[in-house]
Structure formats: C-alpha cells, structure tokens
Image 1 (cartoon, rainbow, N blue to C red):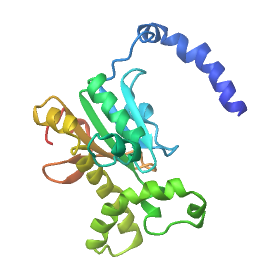
Image 2 (tube, rainbow, N blue to C red):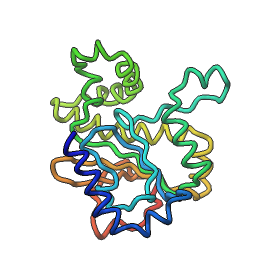
Image 3 (tube, helix red, strand yellow):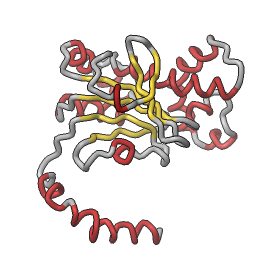
Length: 222
C-alpha cells in the first residue's frame, strides 16, 4: 500500500498541479464524449490506452467486458437483472448523452478461459460463476467453429466475445435508436496486452484490423 499512498501524494503535487485548470473545469459536472466498456482486469487501463484526459471517458468495467442483454423494465425483472452495468450504460447515453461507445476486450482474458476450463477456485466464487454464464452464447459460437488448438480457441473466444457484447448492446432500445439515427458511433476493440496493439472491429465486414495512423479516422462503418 505504501506505493499507492506515495502515488496519491505525487498525483496531488505533480499531475494535478500541471492540469489544475482542467480539474477546475470539471468540479461541477462531467461531459464525457465516450462510454468505454471494458474488463475489470488490472492490465487494462482505458485512459492510458487512449491517451485521454480526465472527463473524456465514462468507464464501465466488469469481469469479461460483458453487456447483459436487454430485458423489459418491469419491476420484478429489474430486481433480477444485472443492474450495475445496465444502469451505467443507460446513464451514459440517456443522461450524459455520450456520442461514442467502445466495447474493449483483451488478450489472455480469464473470463473467456474460464468458460472452458473453470478453475477450482470458481467453486468458492458463486457470483463470478453466475456472471460468466452470460458468456455461454460466445462459447457455443466458438465451439461450432471447431478451433484446432487451445490458443486458437482463446483468440477466437476473446474476439467473438466482443462481437457478442456489441450485439447485446444493440438490444437496448435507447442504444439502437440513437445508432440508427446516426447519433451514436459504436466500436469494438481488442487490446493485445503484450504488444500494446489495439484491433478495431468492422461491423460490416465482421473483421478486426489494427488501428493505424491511416485508418483511424472517424469510421461510421458500423
């Protein structure tokens, strides 16, 4: 913990001071332009990956960057739903009126691995076990492709998971309507931890391509 306490002091004395005007502008309200949905994995750091400032991203994190499919807003359904992620998405779009959504998965994802080879420790984590059941459609899609190796299976699973979460996102009426009207851009990213490379998903071609200088212009290709 000493490193964290020292870091808090360093932030106040160095980083905060150098951006004091920005923080002053944020003291009363936030106005993020992008909802960034990603995994809770400690190796994934959205602001660092995107070189973005405080106030730019509204970040939602959970195990496996999962977006539960939409359910009707009836009181009994709401009580049974996965409200944390759903409420955050609703807040970002309906209240903050963000203009972009990025769903970002990553390499070496523990949640994607656990749907095939659940670790013994998962038996002592019933909430985690229940949560990753939401990845069952991903598992079935991957198995249907009959990958030749475990490494190929993981590569496919991590990327198909992003595709699946984009599909789930578009089941929400307030997302689908904004997307159809051209008021919202939606992206799927795959972050490769060991190389720092980020692949962007083309929803029309259904393929991932590296984000490069020549192709990173605003793409409403979805």
